[in-house]
Image 1 (cartoon, rainbow, N blue to C red):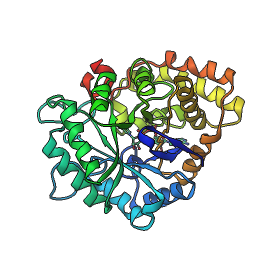
Image 2 (image 1 turned 45 degrees about the horizontal axis):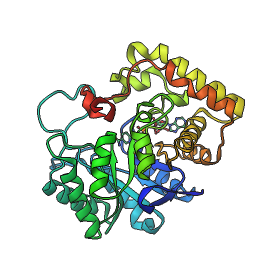
Image 3 (image 1 turned 45 degrees about the vertical axis):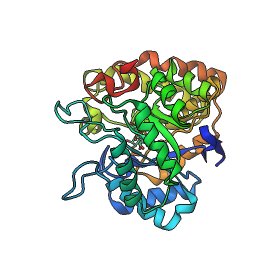
Image 4 (image 1 turned 60 degrees about the vertical axis):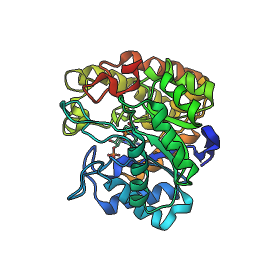
Length: 342
Ligand SMILES: NC(=O)c1ccc[n+]([C@@H]2O[C@H](COP(=O)([O-])OP(=O)(O)OC[C@H]3O[C@@H](n4cnc5c(N)ncnc54)[C@H](OP(=O)(O)O)[C@@H]3O)[C@@H](O)[C@H]2O)c1
């Protein structure tokens, strides 16, 4: 697997792995299978691992971010820390999802919380340093400069290697980058979620910030393997792209599938390869982080790092987003994602 250099000199494997998949989120899993997938990722050269303090189930007797996903990743790190470029996130403290309801604070970015969150993640991960530490969602009540200033203190203290931001607007990115170098923005970007291309992607290119597209397979939808019943059973079932729009969005699946068939690749591989091509066209480094519970699919996704799309494929794939019905937000609050605040 070749490497890619994001911003701030951070080098990662060209394909990353979204470890959210290894604690139950889109269907169940268990620790043994999860560790098998994590080890398979590193064996395949997919060494850029993405977790977050909020992923997983709450631990008994605790409040705040769940931490069980980080604890699972820690079990891999205990054996293979030197092989991994470790990314985690902080800042989400309340419920997410379309039916999360009102009341309670959902994000925190005040300096005291930033320091405490860093130490808590380091403890759970069982490591001395987080290679890439993201603000998962900005706190609307705290200037982003304060949050990033406190994050930069963690870099100065040697607890963090590089800084990242998730679902920020171009304006928020510029304000943050003026305080401390930002290595990467992680936001949703895929064949059917392209709003970041209007402002955030050009700002990254201009500032020398890398892009880490999350949900690069459209939370599985773009692979053409999901059933309506499957998505109805988890948080994907309440988004605007499923439910009544499920049938209409099969046109998206079909369009990606047609390109994949012509290229003798899979739909997942085509969706991932399109992101590399999009990064090249926009002039910035891109490292997708697909998640899966399956060792076989992990290998399939890793192989996409070497798939180059021809002009005919790109022309067809560039039209896919026009077929999508419904927005990408999984939360009822439009400001939860960058486009809702632009
Ligand atoms: N910053 C943020 O706010 C944010 C938000 C969401 C996600 N993320 C990060 O981004 C990562 C990836 O996003 P995601 O998990 O939401 O979505 P995704 O990677 O687009 O899709 C994951 C889904 O695709 C399926 N899948 C994976 N590879 C496949 C293949 N080759 N063929 C068929 N199906 C395949 C998986 O099912 P199986 O498990 O059954 O294979 C799973 O249901 C997460 O793990 C997390 O680390 C970040």
